[in-house]
Length: 119
Image (cartoon, rainbow, N blue to C red; front, side):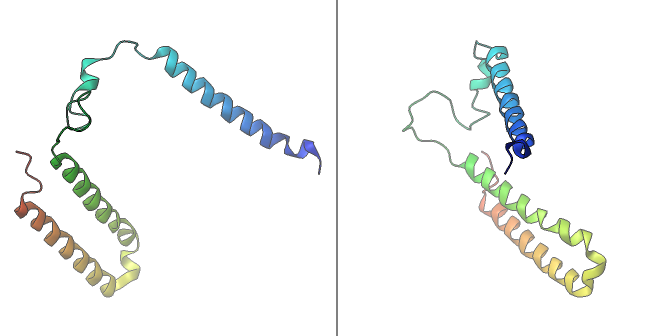
């Protein structure tokens, strides 16, 4: 084993560490040192910032976020099907129709239960 053979690996690691340190240093140097009032607004986290950690908070924000992720991931399963729609034939089409039916039934159920109502 020759150490010169590993020079590109060491150089790659060194450049990666240097770029990371440079980005962190520039961020610390260029950031605004005075907090912006909009940054502490409840829009970003769902409730008022800098209050008691044991306060009651509304779980609707998290429920809507989880439902968005759930339905978004289910829709992501349609992309592989869309790419291979010609190869899967009628069986694949029927499977996607069943999948979309279950998705729509779940969405309608959540809608009727009021999980998407913000007020």
